[in-house]
Length: 288
Length: 209
Image 1: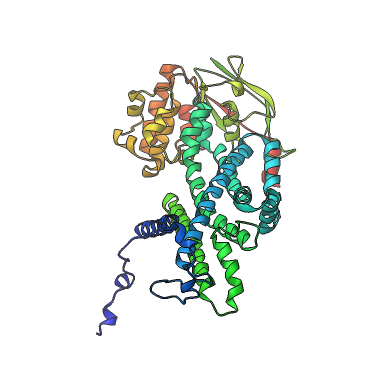
Image 2: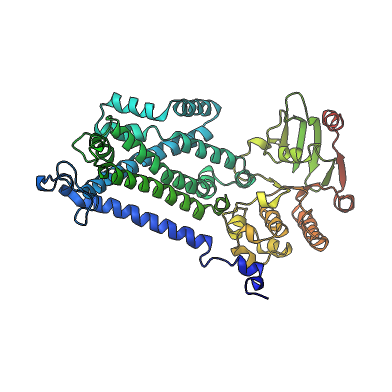
């Protein structure tokens, strides 16, 4: 008998060294550390991102400047990190506000009766019915562009999906037998909310919040790229990308490639972190 | 104490009434069995009698007070058919039993609840074990009527007899009225002092057309 014939089915499908939970934890830790590193370094970079040095114009990527330099001799790595950290801050702030709006509206829709529910559901449909980028541009433009405009636009346009989830969860919980029983056993409404409802809804809320980050970041970058967002003196990732458009035809590919890749990596990482968090909190979804 | 249902009607669909002008009066020394095939509204009736559902017309009165409007602890306690749905999967059994109205050690012993189970989550117990907690939880100090909706279907025969023996003595000692729903005729004959047959024409016509 040859060697391959003696491998049993069990050996063939031998378990990987890490189980799925450890793998998920590892991914979660790695993603979080990476994102934290981008944010912290980007914040500490300071003025390097806007310091011009005309002796070092248009450098290709090299050891001293891994992402190259632009037409004003600014280091692209520093600019990219700075831009990314600005995007992350805005994303963080905007998605927290969006999530809070979602929590309040979702809870209100589920608990304050049919009329309130109908109005809130109508608003959800309304906001979801308008193309997202269009809505963002409208809001940002109406408020007067700039950083404030972007933050407000991103913050008040991302709540519908999470609102739906929270509303659905609470509606389902309200009908759960054990919650009705708790009421008949004389438990107060407050106690039922704290003991039975929040432990169920909070994990969903948290995962929803983290999964809002990538959307918020991407939309901030898109708005800025189109010129409705951050002012040009800020090294926002959207600004970097739109400025580099003019120089792409001159063959300066590194101006767009690296910042674009960092943006994509960040968004994917946030998605990965959110997905891992969901798997940790709600193990049933891990097999999907 | 007296539990009275006066002219109760209820239906889930428009135009189809599962219960039509249903009347019943139960004293707290009685053990009443409710008999009907599946889909005839036994569980619905139980929920109406214990104040979970407001009937479309009519009232359930406990010593003259509308049961649906009672705030706080409800003296009419219902034990549900599915124990796994009747407990919060995120709470430990000791927290679940603590929601009841001062449940004695005696009740837990009588139902065969082991102390070791108190620190577990519902998912770590079998359906029958969880159901014993649900029964114990419903036997709080202020309970005057107990509604048992198919509570022993998931128990083996020995445990069934243990649980029912305990329940019958407990109910007799504390003068708790008992309303029982079960498909087992033998059990029904042993427990019920009186049997009520639910028959509802609309539901039947739905079943057989």
